[in-house]
Length: 261
Length: 273
Ligand SMILES: Nc1ncnc2c1ncn2[C@@H]1O[C@H](COP(=O)(O)OP(=O)(O)O)[C@@H](O)[C@H]1O
Ligand SMILES: [Mg+2]
Image (cartoon, each protein chain N blue to C red):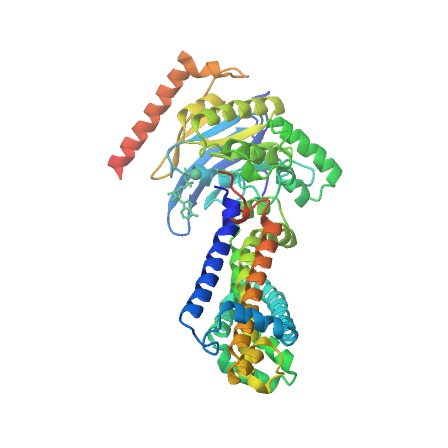
């Protein structure tokens, strides 16, 4: 059996089965659509409310990508600073962990008060959530250099800069891309969660706002449609990261090499 | 690294490349890895450090490479010292047990690495890489990634990377230890040819008696607990050597002498300590 085909066909098949089952069960038990709308009803809502939902999607995407980019830039810089010396890492890493374990829901209201501009406030919240995997993975990567290669560079009198660019960064790349995968998903989650916390008092434009509104109005099909958009966005984001990582590592790294069997 | 004036042993004796004088090593954790060693390596020799694991072979080799300083005693290199690579002068280069290649770089770039790091211009460097790859029989594999090569071929890349610096002294720490015997014999034959052709000086570490006899002009036999040099055995067999040497009476006689020496030392060590 063609494995590459199966890789796509199998999950899509599962999805179709679930959709059909969903449709059949909703129909069979005559579930009212304000409890569980069938897939076709959701599709209807998606088409009918497309203008509204799509605008919200753009807002959420803007926050997600903004936060993701910020997390990548800040996370990478922090990681590079940390690996410069054990002392820096030892004294600062606990605080990076602190950032990671503090529930964003708890500090989001503060940030929203401090940062006046709503979109920016949400972006900051999402960044905090997305930051940690980039920092920890990049540090791990920059540190897990083959000791033999370090010796080799040292014997060849490589400068610090040469060792960084020609040895540490390429060694860190697979870890960095692993961090990107996790972080991109977290940026989306962060964008949605932050907007929930900000509530209707926020900009009132993102997908989370639409979900809240739809909930108040018991417009469950629209709620499902908004949810669907978030999920699809998450999956696409993940696939984008997989694609980027493959682009960068395919030629050499184990995780991305297509093994012929 | 100060050069020690070479003692002239005979009128025609080649220059001393490395002079180890009473160098020993006690590691920070108290491990006495090596009792004081006296050893002079002359230009053009193929010296093998032979002994069981833990006898301090790698420690001695790393001291010769100036990667490790002796606890007492001293080492001297050529008059005027040495340079690993780069600027003119004597060059010393080390090949490790693992190929230690950069997995993200193609063969070409892996071999060129020492030149890149030394800032050798690309055009000249590429020509030297081609020469080095030809020497190890890897012409045509320039664009392969390490993972696309067998263990033996990866080791050849590693050797090419050493040769590209045109070293005067080549140090190898069990370079073929991880390979199967057939591949190892083939690489042994190639390395001895290279040594002959390029007039290299080689210090080679192994725990295989047969590999040591086949390759060496001189074997430094070592024993463990504590790590020390037992004896030096000269292998008086003309070069270039071929596989035929492996099945001669002389080869068998050397093997007998060496294995008795090693067995005796390990038996004594066991009762002494
Ligand atoms: N960095 C180190 N710190 C402490 N002990 C070491 C270190 N390196 C090697 N040793 C010890 O020194 C002895 C000799 O080691 P080594 O030179 O690697 O032996 P060989 O290469 O002959 O197997 C061993 O007992 C080993 O455990
Ligand atoms: Mg060793």
